[in-house]
Image (tube, rainbow, N blue to C red; front, side, top):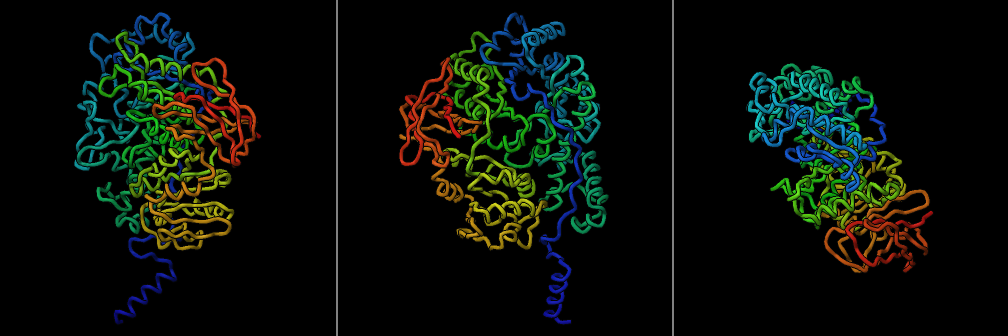
Length: 639
């Protein structure tokens, strides 16, 4: 058989039997579904949606829990705190010097005082360092059980904080679970927070490559794919596989499996804790904004009772970006935000007032419950203006729940792609998100693997970057939405890869829309349109298309507008990100259909709202503000 006939025969067999070319994934070559993860119902405790959390740490835990007196009541009045998270005394004593240690009796008396003042008690714990328990801090666990440590590709442990980080695929899981259940029972905790619920890295690469992980990963591949599919997909039967170092389909599957591990950790802890107390809640510090899939957080979000992340060193603008993403990941669960109000170089000092105000305001405006790691208990702490700003904002927030209700109003949706982050190393937060928020485009973020027709229906614009791994179900919903009149901005590679990062013969988005996507093209599809753009062009296209639906300030000012609808009212949250003064005129999108009338302007420090006039100019409602406080809410009657 000559070479031409041989090539044609291989091609014909591939067409008839849908055999993909090497390195490609045919549209019909779908992978076996993932193994379902156990999932309990999230807690319905009402306090989770009303929490204002105080977390003293280290020497300030000593300050907060020593000679308590009426401190719990004073802090509640000054800041609105109603929950406190602390380390049990043995763990606290393991991380501080002798002068800041606490006795068991002193700790219990202090916790009782906070409870008497109406606080909920959250206890700090962890898998990776057993909640700073002494036996981890002094190195005993690492010496007795070296096989429990997270290991890099060369077998080296992670030793941040001084001792080897523990891996949940070893006996460390049961050990740390027993510890956590014990402290929860001893101190009658209302909740447990697992810190750093993640794998980590060393200079040699990502973890974990320990023998426990090797065994569990092979077991997962065998249970999901079987030996024959494992051989076809990865070149070896399941029992012969090792966790890879080089990127490719097996590496992408390992990254996905790492996410599963921590989701299973959460469910294991939640089940055992609820046996002790059905009302106890569990959550973990997920740090969901991490630039890639290193931490293995992405399947935890639906396996905890609230979504929490650490937000340190951020500006107000960056805080807004992160909270928009957080709300999408929370999926209806309460979003809690650990707000870094302190100086990174000196944990006993607050950041300047000009920073503290916007980062708290941005968190509140985007619907996140504040979690304050606060180091301001010392008389010599200084930066009293920042403390005053914090007190003013948080106490006002706690006293005005009606202003923080309603449903986010948006005309634009920004897709987030967890599968693209894990399979292809794409960032979770799209590059254009910050520019759209800064231009006051009313938007929400949407997970592309959790899309619904209901979520898409009210949106006029959707952006799909970095959604290179769009699933067939997601593109079916997007295609129907576009044909009904939606405007989609998509990268050329949208839907071109499967969940293992394998290139498809044809993009799922192209197939669903029956188009070919080339950068720069704008194509009409039904009543809608699709613009294919490179990531750096996304913001320009979206800003051009959203011009009529943006909020506008005249003169321009560093103010972000976050709109919500409630029955009969429109609530506009205004965050001033940088120093500026009024007066300014705020023009509302014409699509809101607000007529002339009167509005109420609510600001911290004022007992009653001030009256504002709503005018009509060039088809838009306009509200004039005499000043620009760091945070305020305008309440406008609306149909």
